[in-house]
Amino acid sequence: MAKRKYTRKQLRQPDEFISFWSKVVEVTRDNAPRVIVTIVVAILIVAGVWTWSYFSDARAARATEGFTKAFEIYNQAVFPMETKLPPTEDGIPRFKTHKAKLTAAEKEFSKAMQTSRGDLKLVAQLMRGSTRYGLGKHDEAIADFKAYLAGGDVEQLRYSAREGIGYCYEAKKQWDKALETFRKLPRDGELKWQAMYHEGRVLAAKGQKKEAIKVLKEVVEKSKSTSIQGRAGDQLAMIEQGK
Image 1 (spheres, helix red, strand yellow):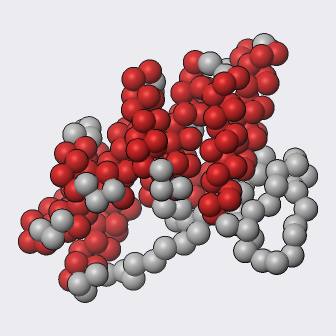
Image 2 (image 1 turned 45 degrees about the vertical axis):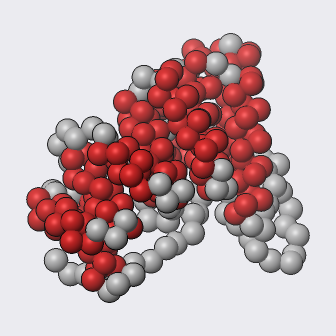
């Protein structure tokens, strides 16, 4: 398998609530940190949970509007320039740094949690966890992810919450807790190779390169997902390059 150069790209985002369901996978697939991709892709499941009857309730409509605003802030591109840009047509402000954008999104998701209920409230908390992860508030992010696990029953979103907890422990360099978390991820079908990919990354971070190489090579050789194969191959290349 050909080795690929490891790169990081910034997040680009859509604007409209009604259209983001169809756009978000394409927009984030290659441009976002993995924890954000996982949560944003998983949130599509909510589209199948909500129904139009939900919008007939005025309180629910206001809650949905608050969640939408928070999500649009979260999805704004960053413009690190001196010129002050006007808000979007929907009144969403522009941001010069990712920190400023995520801080605003965290605040709006907190507001959305106060005005919503049920699945919407839980998803807002899951998304707040993602913003807190991005802000380096790892303990608070873990609390949000665990809250979703305690109350949410959408399995794809539960997977994202578990994965988010693992990323937080990884960011805190609590390698054993991260490894334990990733090893407990569901392993049905291709999920097995996704979990092993995470396991290999953390083993490499711990300095157990021999074990990491063994795990990652198995992923590359046996996974049927080109995406997982590619990410595992990237990790192998970085280990071999001493990164």
